[in-house]
Length: 119
Image (cartoon, rainbow, N blue to C red; front, top):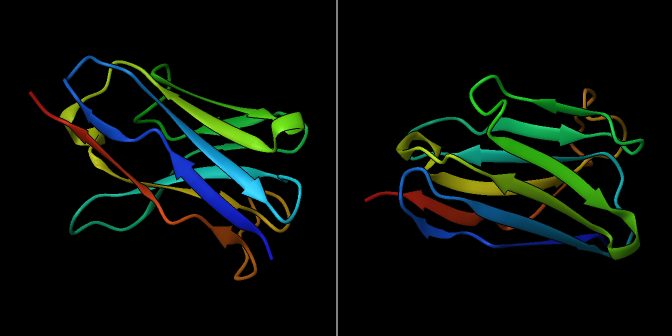
């Protein structure tokens, strides 16, 4: 059974930075993604990284967020800089069963971590 545990969320002022971590157990990380869901909105893809390291980003975070992976630690990260109030959401980690452009019901999700950007 794969388990994903996110950490690193919190309250930060606009313009600040946070680094989220997603540690996997029960299986090695595969293609991985970070999603977010704000109140009243659908969950959306923020960033994804293939098993080979290719990355993809939502237009709203390009140039501000960076996704990375440490296979030895079975962990994926999301470095978030220049945070804006509209980045406020619960952030979820996803382990894809296949490729990140081929989401499946068999993918695994973490429990989420709250990120609040406010002065």
